[in-house]
Image (cartoon, rainbow, N blue to C red; front, side, top):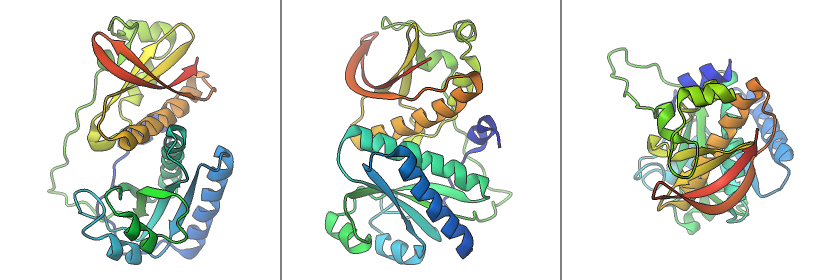
Length: 270
């Protein structure tokens, strides 16, 4: 599936069938997790596959998920971050989203699940051989059929003139500005990238030969860094279609634009 179509159709699934993925496919997924870790190469995070989703669900029911509402999946992948550095969290989220793309291509559905509110003692008890910290899981399996009478929530998306800046004065990029740089399609589809509670906290600053990623202020540092990693992944994948084949440089600084404070988390050369 084209990345543009995948982004437009990408939906988190909250209800899965009580059907396990077959053993051979689970083994292939586990091999792919090792490939992702090797590709990233830093050792700052690892993926742990939990094939017995029921055991993890039973242990996290009432304490994990969103406000204690745990998502029940037949299987989970844990994102275990080995340290608290920004780049470890960002890269972990980046490759988790790459995993989601892979699972989708295999006909599987997914849902990010937060377990950040679970105590460390409970995590040690529930997660096997815990070496770092786990604040996010990915539930995956086969979605339950949708109720044809169920109303699908409408999700607003930022307009192109709302999230791309031309300079620090706050001047917004127009469609013509983006067309002149060959970035109109990239940013059009990038609007569909997922974010925590669909807040779309990212903004972009166009400079002469690079794009700077800005994040709105957030009380939840880790959630903001995860959102940054996710948007970085989709920027890179969409960029490949127009010949942008470079990687993000992760940085940490601040920038005031039109009187509003942003955190700069990365830049990428065009």
